Length: 385
Image (cartoon, rainbow, N blue to C red; front, side, top):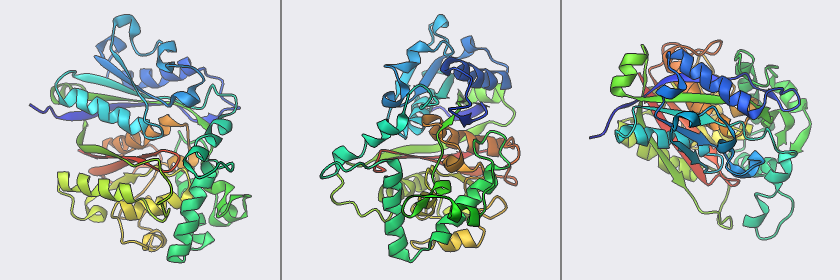
């Protein structure tokens, strides 16, 4: 029998730069997990299983979960490592949902690791990800991959640099009111356009920072959720999709696999009009243009109409389909923690606990995670009250 699954608690740390971070990886884990446990008056020994999400190549050690003591190892609590690249946060949540849904555990903790903390120069790691899948290596980094999508989308739909800057400005404005966000400067469209060009057409303020911080979520069975939480957020559907690493055929003008996945998810929960049926959306947007591509892939508008949706103000905090009221990954990128945070943010919105960035009376939300140096992997989750 399939058990209903709910999110009952979220624990966050404040996000900052690696230069200013004074907390160790163990201290970050303890802080996020303790906040999540305290929120529902639980202790770590009450948790029946833990899911740790990370990307080993960025962690600076092998099997990083084993060096932390915040997951209840002293109580023999099972610890499950999940690593699917950038989507590991979404995949870890999917694993937790399966464990509870199958009736194996009543309470499962998911922890989003601050991936970049202990690597001397994570940019060097990022720079090794793309060359192997192209015909010959030529120094591609993560920002270059974002620029490929942005440049093609620009050409395909006659989008301007100002349009891309407006996406970034929307997120920076939202992050300014988010007490957990890393960059809270509230940059305007003009300031985005005047920031240094990094990889055309992406300016510096259209590219996510490298952040330090962590997040934890607790998932519960129906009985446990109703007992422990006054506003449980129910997992209505969650799924993932993966693509090949081969790059020769890719045209970089849309998120084709996300489009397929979202249609599957919508069919499962009966969503026919995503813009009308969803109240809040958290998109994995490390680069400004990605948000426009995701609007279309998620069916919030027709192809080529994302800029119109943006200019109408529909995706602002007070719009009819708020997207990334947290400021998104564009303003806070702690690696895999950022992937978990998309789901945590939607849960907080539905609980009415999104301090400084609360959407008015949301009942249904969507969380998205994106991964792979070429965008090969996506997860989508639908949560509701």
